[in-house]
View 1 (cartoon, helix red, strand yellow):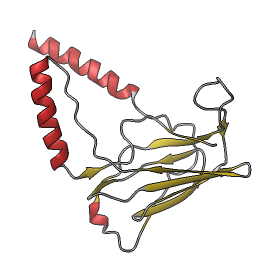
View 2 (cartoon, rainbow, N blue to C red):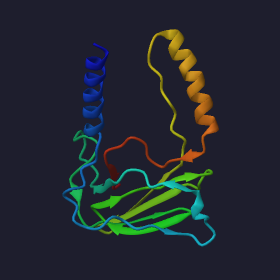
View 3 (cartoon, rainbow, N blue to C red):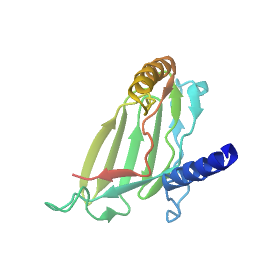
View 4 (cartoon, helix red, strand yellow):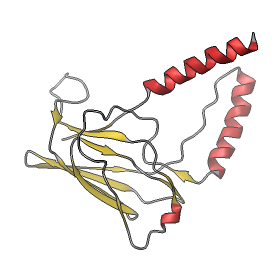
Length: 167
């Protein structure tokens, strides 16, 4: 019986994991290469995270959802004190995970004569515990302590796409 439960749990978890995978199969360009600043110690790079599609979208019409049609060929730049990259959309982007709090990242895209800039602050992902109230409280306290003690800074977390809506 325990074997059967473990097998079912593995199948469910595997399915959930695969549903969150980013689809970059329709992007035919090589992944974006980041240039690191000369003063940035690349030993701070912990891993490259997940490869995600970065897509630019037109501003939606009133009442038409959160984004309009995709813009192919928008020129974009990602810059921080630690790294920079320039590319055209759509693109495959893998944002680094860094030890020690990195600087704010600015993303600027230009399309149809307009430039839109956005900033993204780095953060430490938190552990979320679900269960009965006592387990949740204890788990949340332990998760908060682990998060505070970790030194893994991210720019994105559990996303399947990096959408950029132009103004």
